[in-house]
Length: 204
Image (cartoon, rainbow, N blue to C red; front, side, top):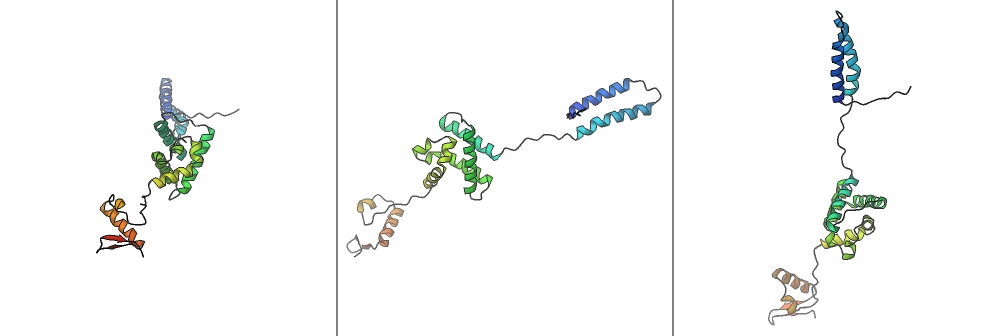
């Protein structure tokens, strides 16, 4: 005969024990009170034992994939006004994105990958218009390198393109700090300021 094992909750076990006590007390054991106590204990033990071993379920921690997915769903709703559609292909693309971002994060950790993903989504406005339209996970995975490069470039300090000669018109548009940088640039090219003639002189 096949044996079936049933898991009972602590509340259910307690209710059964109360009903059991009531049944036993209704039985007339006469003068044999010790027998009543022994029978009561024997019947309670099988029920109480397994119940105490029932583990209390705990909430499962969100997986890295789930955190990536949740961030994408929120971003997709905010960016496109539509709910994200995730099928098998999109799921595989998201896994590939996770692996790539983990590999290229500073410490190559799950936390670093998630931070990179959140940073990428938050800075989507810095990518070119064509890439901004690539909102599906399969497209993001395809152009991930280009997207990251564009975002990184957008946050790099801009290098001023200085003219190779003195231009009074150009200099008039500069602030004091930039004007000093412009003069230093010209000196590096061999230009010098002639104080007697009050003009910049090119290299001879």
